Length: 409
Image (cartoon, rainbow, N blue to C red):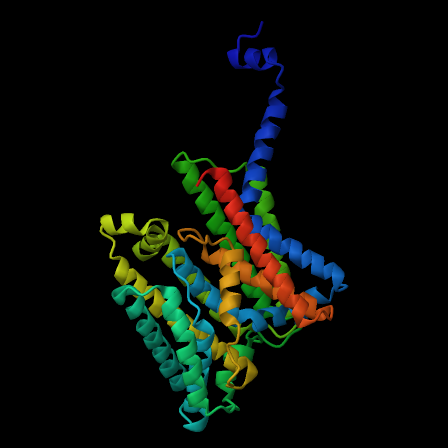
């Protein structure tokens, strides 16, 4: 009989220790996959359309176009998911984007302001628009749905007034770079672009360092971590995706300026939502507003600044869209609010508030972008594209409701 009680128990129970270890490893993997289901969904959608389009979707030029064409929606998704987490909604972002694009057109083209000054003034006006709506929501107490529905009409009308119901173009070259510019050739002209590849390598190194430090920190404080083999597999897979993405961009024109703007926003707002008091207050308000009030959180102030931020990001999205088209027109911004809201919900935001992430909203926006792009390549009409996106949104929210009922929330 063995002197080791653990061994004897395992043998007596008919359990093979190696099988038990594998079962634990598999359970960790399945749990981790469940937490990252939205990322897996993105990979699945990309793989599906890569097959259906005979690989056209994954061509370097198309990958670059995906970023440029969807940049404004991803910017809006960042602000929208924050608003939704706090338990609100914003229906006006498309109209605000059109209004700010029109303002920038008047300043940069008609009045011939320096492009940078036109951008700064436009973003300041966008923040004031957000403050206007935040005032009615936070301090007057009108539901955000009503305030932003009114804003959708008000700022669409003002956009038409500013434009005189006509188009404004063409914009200065530097302004157009916001939506169509590329950063490449800083290490000399080459094919593929060495600078873009270097940025991709730095991103991979930063990812590895951050993930290793996070894992070591959890181990230091006795927190549970995933098995080392699965940790390494995940790192290799994600690093491979980043490397492939960098290679695709380097093989075309380099890094889109829109992607640089997005990267900065994701880093900044990721820190805000995960590591600041303001971010924790947003989650607390969305989880239980009454409890947040009782705990001393200034909920009205948080709501106000949320809409100031949303106005600013809507204005930035309007500038990016206007720069990409090189045109400020009356139809700009149509449907932007629906795309941004869909991105947030597909990315895991809860209808009731209190749940959601910046990363999830970005992935949700990318799923919508891949759907649009893939179906366009296949020649599917806009009517079917709208129907498919509607079904995806419905299933995403239904899945969220199902998970809440299953967990008893």
